[in-house]
Length: 65
Image 1 (tube, helix red, strand yellow):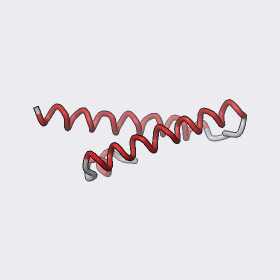
Image 2 (spheres, helix red, strand yellow):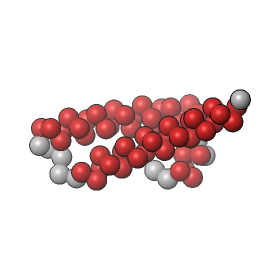
Image 3 (tube, one colour):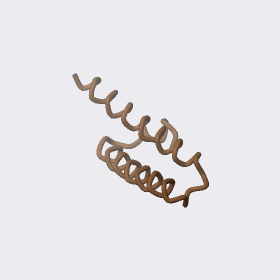
Image 4 (cartoon, helix red, strand yellow):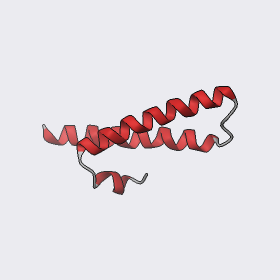
């Protein structure tokens, strides 16, 4: 997901996306260990999405102060 798309969402939606992405990453890692995942790029993209969401949440937290 692009940063511009994430910026349009409010904090609650971003937190919901963060939780979904974290569970997706856990599932992908579990499947990787089981040998089911062929697309390693999905793991990388999910990790980057999590980092983007965390960055935006922290950014909004700093701006409130």
